[in-house]
Image 1: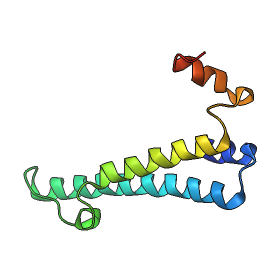
Image 2 (image 1 turned 180 degrees about the vertical axis):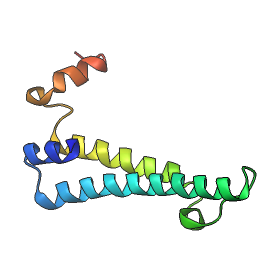
Image 3 (image 1 turned 120 degrees about the horizontal axis):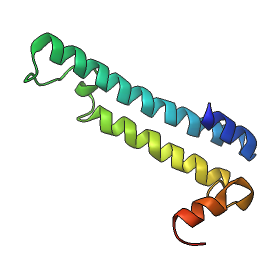
Image 4 (image 1 turned 90 degrees about the vertical axis):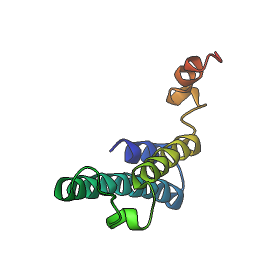
Amino acid sequence: AAPLLLTATAGLSGKLAFASVVAMYVGLFVAAWGDLVKTWVKADKGGDHLVTSGPFALLRHPNYTGEVLLWTANVFTALAAGNILNPARGGIFALSLLGLV
């Protein structure tokens, strides 16, 4: 719900907000799907078995790929919303964490 609340109150264009939130959830889905398939295959065929089905047939590391997509889209959404540098939206706190204020 937090990505939707952020983009709804930020005044972003509808297409940009939608695309960034969709990218975050796609990343979350890819990472979770990779974890699920890996767990099933390892439980069925043993811990030493190389997983080559599901998302592993397309991506070498779907867990990492999903995480990178999720967090990159999250950062892009925050930057586009002005959440990092806008003092009205907690930007001073973010800048103080970086040691800039």
